[in-house]
Image 1 (cartoon, rainbow over the protein chains, first blue to last red):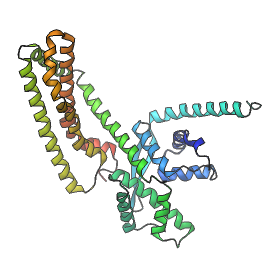
Image 2: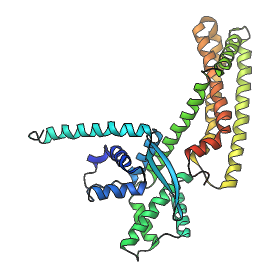
Image 3: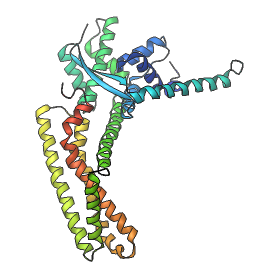
Image 4: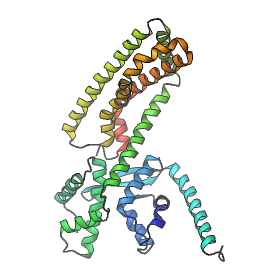
Length: 110
Length: 229
C-alpha cells in the first residue's frame, strides 16, 4: 500500500476490531491477518504496530497473556471490558468518517 | 522449519544489540522475528538464518526497534504513576486519612510556631536523610536481583531505581525551604499550602520508597504474565 498515511489514523481501530473478533492475538498474527483480509492492500508496519499495542495496553484497553509456544514465549493481547466498549465507539467514529468522506468525494452516493 | 533454541538465543542477543534492554520487550520482538523468519522459510527453505533475520528486521523501518522501545517506556511510566496515584488516594480515605491529617497538623503547627526556620530544617533533614538511605538500599536490592535473574524488567527498574526520583524533587527544593518560612507571618494561605506540600511530598516519598517496593513481586506478576514463568 503506497499511501499508508491515509490508514495511519485508523490503526488503533483496526487492532481493536480484530481483537473484538478473535478473542486473543499476538503481534505477528495481527500483521498477517490484516494482510490477508485486505489481500495485501494494507500492510501494518511492525514499527507502528507494537507502539500502538503498548499504548492501548497502557490505556487499559488491552490485557496481556503469555504462553510458551514451540521453544519461545508468545505474548497475546485481548480486549478488556473498557476495550470492548471503546471498540464500539471507535467503529462508530470510523463509520462516521467514511460517510463524511463519501459525501465529499462522491456526493451522488451520500 | 522451526527455529532452534540457539537461534532463539541469537535473536535475544540481536534485540539487545539494537538497544532493547528489557526482557519483556525482547521476548515480544524475538517471537515476532521468529514468526517472520519461519514464514520466509516456508517460501524459501534455503534462505540462511542471518539473511532471513535481517529481512525481518528491515520491516521495522529505519528506526528499528526505537519506536517500540520509546512507547513501551511511556506506557510503563504511565502504569507506574497509576500505581503511585492509587496508593496516594488511599491516604485520603478512612482510616489512613487520620494519619494524613495528623501529619498535616504537625507540619502546620510547627511552621506557625516561632521556631519555623529550625523546624523546617529538621523536617527537611529527617525526610531527605531517610530518602537517601532508602534509595541506596533499593538500588542495592535491585543489583542483587539482577545478579540472580539476569533479566531486566522495565517496571522493576522503575520501582527500585526511579523511586528515588521523587525524593530528588524534594531534595532539590533546598533553597525554597530556607527562604519560604520568612513569608509565613504575612500569609496564612501560604502557610497552609506549604504544610500541605510537605504532607503530600512526605506521603509520595513514603509510597514510592517503601509501599510500592514492598509490593514489587505482586505488581511485577500482575504486569508481566511471563515474570514467574
